[in-house]
Length: 199
Image (cartoon, rainbow, N blue to C red; front, side, top):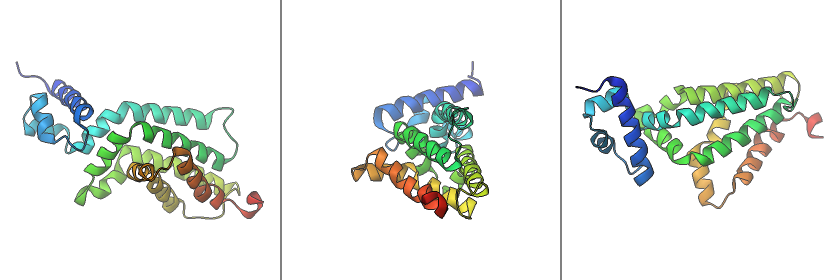
């Protein structure tokens, strides 16, 4: 009896996880995944339009747990009162999560190439992260912690400097995660503070 759609999807995800672990995300083709899952190319592409979708499916549980953890930390009774300090806390947790999940995050980003490149900015992961950055930046401005700024652009810029491919390159330079966090702090925390706060 033919497997139903849910079983096909689960088998594709399981096969992708196995191949990604064995030979790496970039070295694994969609054709190899279809063969390992025992499905046709049409079935594979009906479920996942490209390898980035598969990476996102494998990351979904981890990203969901990360979002829950961050939201809990930012709303906790002992969370920093300062919006910029909470922004730094978010960036710290983000860099730790990226370091753990670099292969899949890189695969997700690399799949958004060519005409698909802008699509990553419509992904649920990016939209949540952009909203989180924007909310904290807006609060910092409204409370006088930060000077007036372009909230949307600054949130985009924060996403860019914490992008997994850049982190990989910086690690190849010999950067530790703390050095990356320190650089982001200087630019996007201390660099946004009003003169009174800096003093």
